[in-house]
Amino acid sequence: MRKKIVAGNWKMNTLLGEGVELSKGVAAGLAAVPSDVKLVIAPPFTHLYAVADAIKGTSVSLGAQNCADQKSGAYTGEVSAAMLRSVNCEFVILGHSERREYYGENNDTLNRKMQLALENGLSPIFCVGEKLEEREAGRHFDVVGEQLRSVLFNLTAEQMASVVVAYEPVWAIGTGKTATASQAQEIHAFIRKTLREKFGALADEISILYGGSCKPSNAGELFSQPDIDGGLIGGASLKAGDFLEIAKSY
Ligand code: PEP
Image (tube, rainbow, N blue to C red; front, top):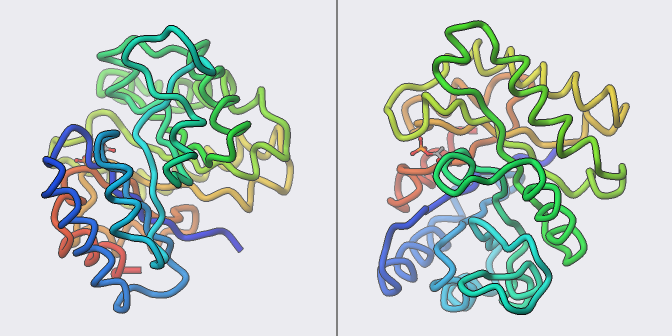
């Protein structure tokens, strides 16, 4: 059985006090969320320690939005995978399109980050997704296939078992446009088929999340698709009520 996961990517939002309140709001609403749905919240680095404390003893898991591609040392401004683990992070988002686009992350950087995350006991939430022009040119399968092969195909099966994949069409992130449930299902099935080429039956155990303007009004339909195992939620994760509503729509 694949895990159902609803993960909130807070991006560069909230000040410390607001973030702690938001995390407490999520924890307080847990009782109404189906017990087989795992909630993950990924606040900014500065909030991790305090948020870890705020959700201690609950089933909400902590994630980070990025990690360094080096182990430790003279890398000013970076935060290592081991540091994230030391504040109780269980997940780390890697390969988000905003990091690929604005910070030049490429497959080389991502391969190093994936290895370090896994060596340190973190589960990477590895993001893939095509840009609008790539979809319009009918190249979305090629683009997503290449993103998967260039990074995930370098992992062992044991490593892959800890990875979560997030399909996030760039044209749907923060735009209010969502992939239709059938567009999302089609590419999620393609992602699973691609993973099967390298990992065989393990592909059926990997959670594949949808991300891109997912909100309470569309989550139910998306999550009812056979290859969609939850969501990576940006904007709507900044309100505890909306985030919980999304998780409840399973
Ligand atoms: C994201 O960037 O991971 C995301 C899914 O954002 P939004 O929900 O705001 O589109």
